[in-house]
Amino acid sequence: MIAAIVLAAGFARRMGRQKLLLELRGKPVVRWSVEAILPHVADTVVVTGQDDQALRSALAGLPVRFAVNPRPQAGQGSSIAIGAAALKPWTAAALVALGDQPRVPDGTLAALLAARERTGKAIVAPVYRGTQGTPVLFTADVFGELRALDGDAGAKAVVQARPERVARVDIDAPMPLDVDTPEDYARLHVQ
Image (cartoon, rainbow, N blue to C red; front, side):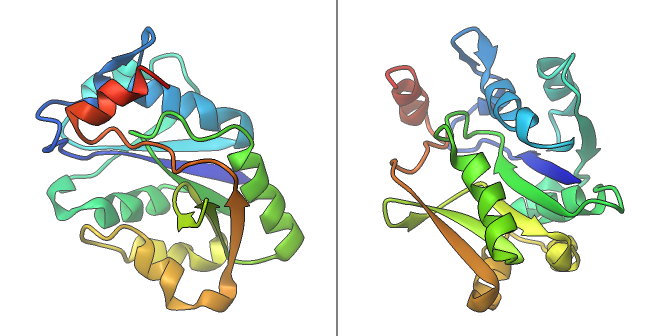
């Protein structure tokens, strides 16, 4: 089974308010992010933090499960660890995606999944016109490393630890925008 871990526990400090709940063309940003992943996976874990109830409301009606990070201030790594711990035991691989990245280019997720099948690599990462980005696909072989993460670096250390186990997929598109600042949010409306 292929799963997804959607990271939605951040504090949105640079935005100054909860960015995941901001409206984008009639829906919260986080809903766009989750809805884009759902057709590609059999199980989706949304990792929340202090805004758990509001995020559950924003995602009402979607077939997702929630895992609450009790200490989101510990950084993105702690949320990935919580999400990895919540995966079902029979999960073969999981996409780790950002809740504030609602516009991952079409075909990216399918390309990552196909690369996993083709290469058998433990990690599959997109490279957007020369820059490695997200979401990243991890197989069950590295779930233990994900469960041990902490801090703000996310899963970068896991990806960089052993380059020979990483497949990189070239995506001919710019890096998808994260909604981190009011300027990022404004740019989303013109894309």
